[in-house]
Length: 201
Image (cartoon, rainbow, N blue to C red; front, side, top):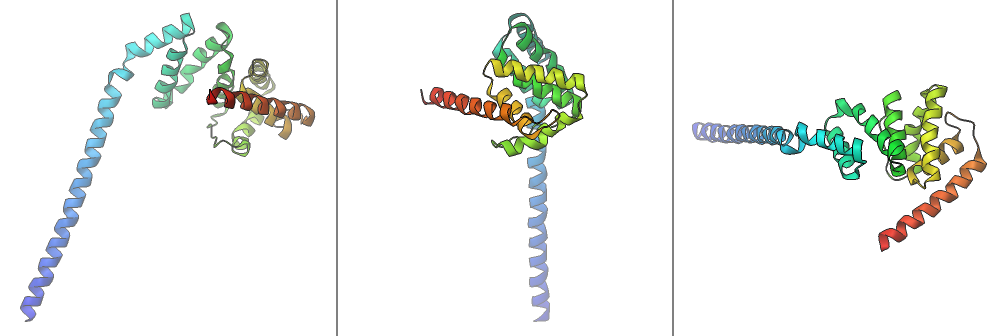
């Protein structure tokens, strides 16, 4: 009887360890397949150097929005080169007067100067830790970034209005000015309402 029990236990242990080994092997296969797929994807035509050069050319000489979007996506996947997008953002704003990118210029430069990571969950509170990095800038850098925010505000860029409103309300890197903040908050509400109407259409 003891022998039978020992045999049953041994069979159970063997079956269990075999199942566990199969799971490990299967997981390795999935991980390897995932790595292969990722490598193939990164080698795919989407990340082809010629395509990126074409996008850079189209942004530089035509101010093409679709090409700029290509560059944004490319630098999301090539984080170590992300500062390379800055001149193209500036070209869109300064050369082609595409002021919808003024808030992007602000963000690109703030990240470049401070290594700040943009985090936003749809609430103003979530922007505070990110915008507090503005304090780290020297006066010239602050003025340069404020220039983009003011340019965006004049051209109804919602992001710029929101950032400048928070900087003024909280006194982040600039003197606190509730009157300006309240005025900008009204503009935020107006622009959000306009955006809502456009979406409904």
